[in-house]
Image 1 (tube, rainbow, N blue to C red):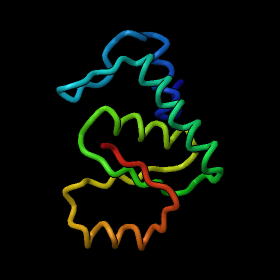
Image 2 (cartoon, one colour; image 1 turned 180 degrees about the horizontal axis):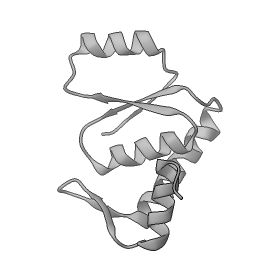
Image 3 (cartoon, rainbow, N blue to C red; image 1 turned 30 degrees about the vertical axis):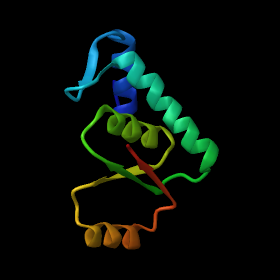
Image 4 (cartoon, one colour; image 1 turned 135 degrees about the vertical axis):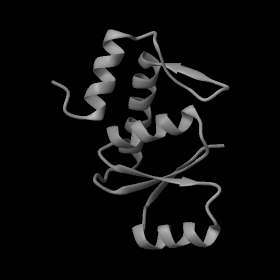
Length: 108
């Protein structure tokens, strides 16, 4: 029985390693690569930021890199807060002031 999204990802990667997991129109990624690259992101977060159960901002557009960041944050024991680049700066500042995150991941 699968209890969380990481268990689901790992079970799917084991069953269908080469099956496409996500596509953003420009890139695609299979389950095996998604799982291993997400773990690498999570590992880097853990090595550089030893806290858990904290918010990590993911400033993003719609791409595979976002999915890697989301899963990586979960692997690190933290939770992600997606921030679209299209959100007005005033709203982003309010989110940052409320959450007081110590880490942010930005694509591009």
